[in-house]
Structures are given as C-alpha cells and as structure tokens.
Image 1 (tube, rainbow, N blue to C red):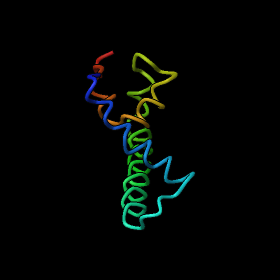
Image 2: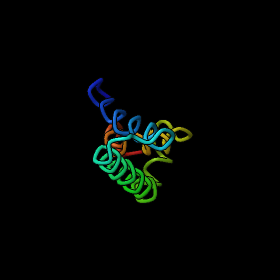
Image 3: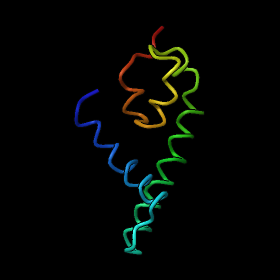
Length: 82
C-alpha cells in the first residue's frame, strides 16, 4: 500500500475523537459522525462479502482488521489467485 493510502486514517481518527470527546461545532459533529458510521457499516459489509478472499490472503490473521480500516484499498494489494 502506498503512503497516500494512509489518508483514510484521518476520518477514522476524527470519528474516534468525536466519540470520546464530541466536537462543540454541531455541523462538524454531524459531518464527522455520518462519515465515521458510514465507514463502519461499509467496511463491515466488505469484511462479510470478501471473507473468503481475506482468509486466503497473505495476512489471514490481521486481514479483517486491515480490511476494516483500509477497505478495498487493502483487498487490492493481493491477488485472488491462490
């Protein structure tokens, strides 16, 4: 994965900050909350849909965590041919 792929960590970090110490600005609070919960739902769906690909991948034990954080960016890093 490229260094720029780590930019996906920014919404995750903002979302976690917003959960433990909610932002005072209501617009920022709702925007960050919606993005964070959208990421959670989509990445859980990816873990379910691509379960077999993750298990057969190079990092089977950490594959679900990587998929949950990076999503399809992680799944593109390895081939489906095993």
